Image (cartoon, rainbow, N blue to C red; front, side):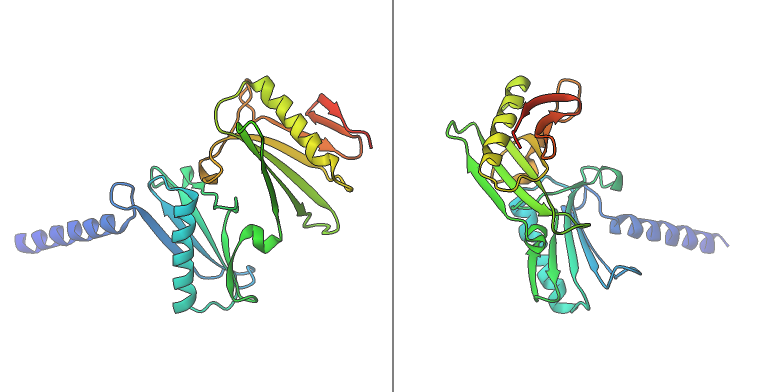
Length: 242
């Protein structure tokens, strides 16, 4: 009886240790990968999620994501598109996962079944980034226009100003307004535009951090074509004549 009980205890702890060893965790893994079958109503779209437990750059994340996506498509030919996304989790818990931006700022890669190749999400959506650097070298600017999903004939725009170091908040707002007006000055059609401020490197979008205002909210301004106002909530910074 004692031998049987001892064997049962050993089996229990062996099973438990195997289960623990198989569970990806920051203290045992660099990253984990999950390849899921299509879910009902997803139009045969499959998903790949890579969760990194160490900090990686956009270049590293995209390179590994491409390799894994290419390998999966080769050995498991999909019936539809495959969406691949990279995440960072310092603890291994889903609650603290942060999406990793890729080199062009996309949130994901996608294997297009129709085109038979891997695209970034922005390439898939036809989003083109217009980038320029300020002559001071203190920041660079990215401007993008994207079609509205509910009405493809209309667009919305995003202006992103990325500083290479901490800047006074009042100065950031002045720069955002000036760069937004500069960008819109050459546009025949001016779409609703939101401008954001970040701190980080041009070559590593995943490391860019959005700048907080003194009240803890993010720094941003919005341009509304119907009124010509450049504002944040109820505060008007400037007007662009219609």
